[in-house]
Image (cartoon, rainbow, N blue to C red; front, side, top):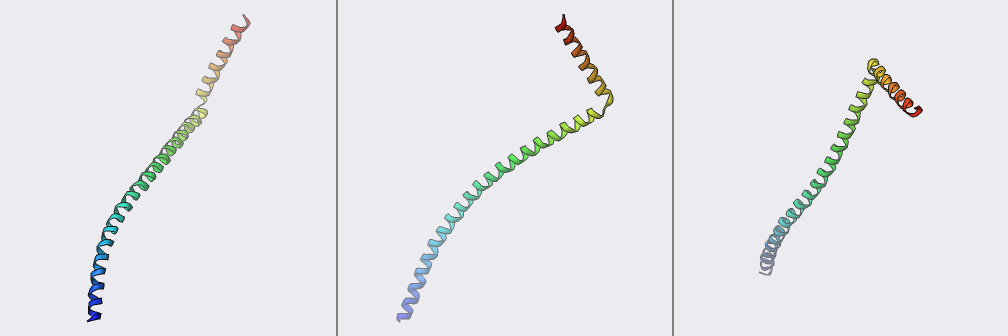
Length: 97
């Protein structure tokens, strides 16, 4: 009889304990979900910063590529040199007069 009473008592206590654990597990999942959302927000911010940095690098590469193409274009180089010569000549004539 005593064993039976203890068995039923332990079963009742374990069922109450299971309800408490169920509540705490549910709350735990909600807290975990909120924490994960915060972590995801931080990761999204980090990803956005990396994307912006990559975009800046790609713009620099495109600018460098254009500069290299311009440097290899002899007509453009000669045109730029002629413009620079005429500019310096005009400035020199203004200062000597």
